[in-house]
Image 1 (cartoon, rainbow, N blue to C red):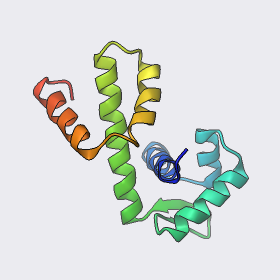
Image 2: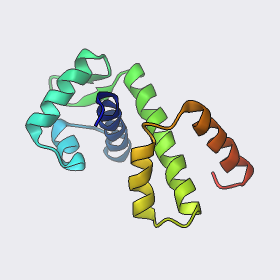
Image 3: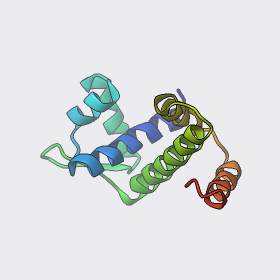
Length: 124
């Protein structure tokens, strides 16, 4: 997994957990992603240094503006790609898994054209 892809996955997971629970802690990320607590701790340190998250003394994690922008972008890609794949007849679980892989590598041009296609076809 590329470093950028890993960073995007963590940020997207934080956004999803924040929206679902209203708060995020390292243990929540570990559970959601199926990673060990030490792995999450290391990743959160990297994200802090990159100014993508803020960790409160209480252990709560919040996205910075730059972290939120990345997370929202990758999540939008995930949702659109999942919807597109389901529209092709792919089952929902496979569509979501494939979208997770493609969302990191698809070019901005192709993603924008896909977005237009989905809007014009009434599928977004």
